[in-house]
View (cartoon, rainbow, N blue to C red):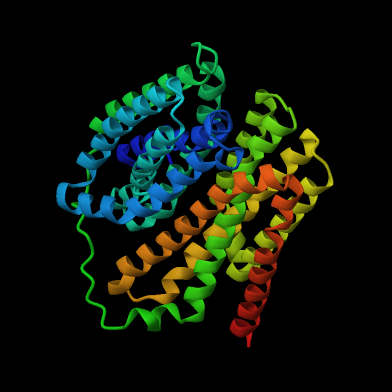
Length: 389
């Protein structure tokens, strides 16, 4: 890994800085929302809007990169994000909840831009180095688990209005990312893939491999986002756990989401793709059970760790299964549909999490994901026997 090009390390550092925004918003947006929202049920709206913004921005971001190149879009995204963070500061200072939610929605484009870092890294290395390059960039997610939550906690009381200082620290991260990205040198000119597929889209999406791949990744994201979004509200606002303990739980969760990515290739090699996804479902069931038993800190902690692991196995499994559903010249449109479905349903989960937790309680949040997990379990069992027969 140490012999990878400079581009990969620049992208890894920028991944950690950009993704700190996502971790930061999951940590503080629900708490801020609970103070500013006209009704407690809307408290997680800012968390949901950033996911909606991500889903709607994926295709436009790729289109802009095909016109202007990756580097210009990466640099522009840093400036764009700094301006929107300023809008977040203004909205919370003036206590304008829906303006804060709008700013969060616009920051979804920043997350969509970040999703292209792994592809930029792949373009910068040889074919043999691609797995290592992808793994190194994913390490940025581990760093963001600490950066995003730490700057939120450190800056919370800098000013009279809570979290204004935290957002100012977030600005510093994007200034640093801008400086780093200046040294990024695109190795290969990015061209949007021309879709010459003759197969109707209906034929593609009816395939078992497409259905299982998309449903697995979507289930992982929906369950993870639903419970994760409700966690800071349930822990800090409703149960009275300290901000420090809430931060610890979310940090552990994000680490559990990304650390297994360095080993999933070996897991797939030894137990197979479908078994790994089945293991992911099992981990999510255990996560729900542990959280249901008690509101104690240790239960939140273990539950969120297992939630992150289960998400990883389902999402990585679905991502690796998806290419079996399309030909090379169908890649762009199939991946676009895949991402739109995942982030669209994730946005619904994030939005409804606040309504569920405030109106029905933490236990109902947990129980409500069980039908989805059972459906995905039966689907994976069907797929397992279909592929082995």
